[in-house]
Image 1 (tube, rainbow, N blue to C red):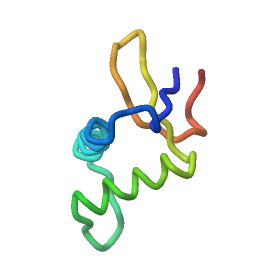
Image 2: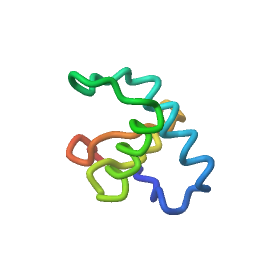
Image 3: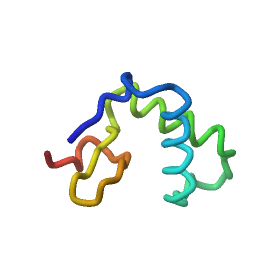
Image 4: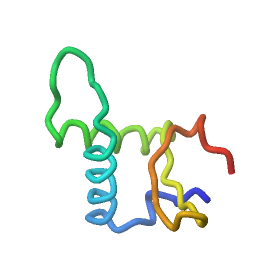
Length: 72
């Protein structure tokens, strides 16, 4: 189930994004990016609709994933 990110408390949303960024360990290319930069990148993806917050009833977890990969 997609959770509208706009309905999440801003501090909670920031914590969710930070946890996602730290968990993913994503490679951002040749230049290393700060945690703040990575969080802002993910926030922009949510704002554009390229990424979505997803609640998994099976695992009882929230995840961030590309909209194109969400199968609801």
